Image (cartoon, rainbow, N blue to C red; front, side, top):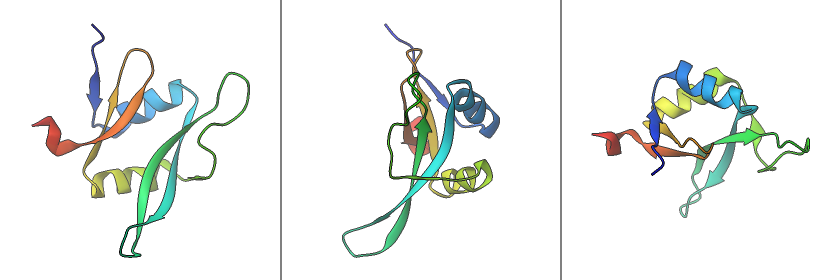
Length: 92
């Protein structure tokens, strides 16, 4: 069984992502009412030098963490290197 961990501290999240050659990114999306919202993403550089998840805009860690906190999200990670953003409310 693979144990997952949920990271909420900014320093833990930044370390986990940068250790895997990732950078913070954000995409602006529109909801069904036409309102623009920020969607947080992480961009990872593959071992072949290419980027995956093109079409997003890199941003600073400060801006990314501000949006992470505003949306009350945490980073769920697995030992295999997979990750996803999850609501912090789900942790309680």
